[in-house]
Length: 91
Image (cartoon, rainbow, N blue to C red; front, side, top):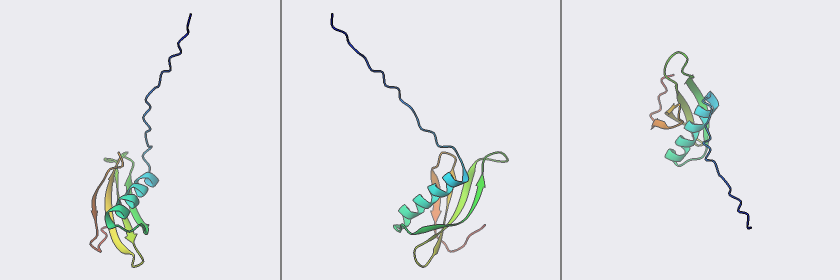
């Protein structure tokens, strides 16, 4: 009698825990990609964990040697929006 061994693979979904560090990193990555410049630094972040309102973050970033100001919005699923540079930070 021939024995067969079946392997069962479970699909696992890796979920990122929402935190200010996660939001900041998502924005830094998005701004670096959008600006085409990998030299990005965090200036400020207005973070919400969702305890008082909808979770999300507004993050201010400097880009390049001239430290050009950029900003973006990060949602709890780490998608980004409003990746802009206008030189003005409403923080």
